[in-house]
Length: 129
Image (cartoon, rainbow, N blue to C red):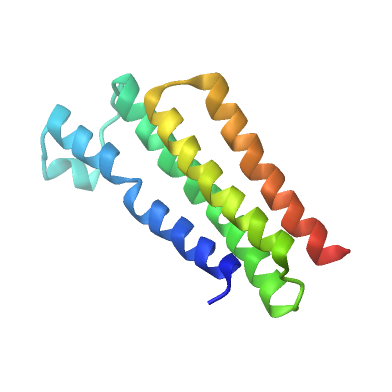
């Protein structure tokens, strides 16, 4: 497997476990009421749970874009050492983003997000140039 695809798989794996802090924290805080599954209650979440939910949702929103760019680069033959490096940067930026988002460090979170976005733009650049 190419490095680009490896980092795509790792990012998908990160997304598949990033929901755990939110769900575990919600159950610990509010319990597990079967009625909540029918119509989820509107809750004022504690700050950590709100951040955990947003961290997961943010990666869930970014993963399709990353996947599309990596797959297009791979299928079109445009994958290169630069796209591999950009895929690695994206993955590690998303790991950092999740950690700092859960920790509540806003300015570092923005830096991690912007780093991941620049990695996406690098892959896009390689596809079209």
